[in-house]
Image (cartoon, rainbow, N blue to C red):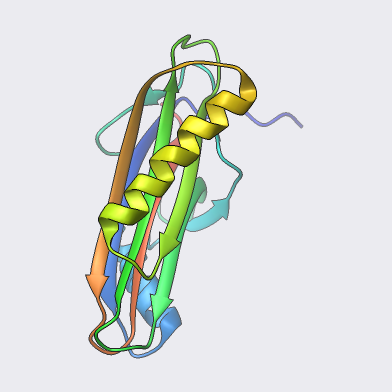
Length: 156
């Protein structure tokens, strides 16, 4: 059986508190709009000619191809951040890159790192990008918290 390449992608983010790390992660997924799906974590390639869209309505319970950054913490007062970076290829017939990064540092640092990861990924592949998109989220932990940033891939 051959698997069809996704045709569209969207960037999402979420943050939340919860009674446990798993609950806070689940709540962050809900906040990002992907909490009622089964996430299939993939490596970081956007198929050629894949189109960026603002929002994807996902079927509940579906297996969703996704690349994501996430971090949880139980340290009140700690800052946690997650970001996704997407490099759109100069040639739309080539694949794009997705990079993910999370840390216990401010979002500005995490986005800077993920952007450089995209630049490096293109350099190592000896290809050019036309644009780099980033989306991230930062949260100051109250009790138990998670942050989540992702590239969701899907079908038209």
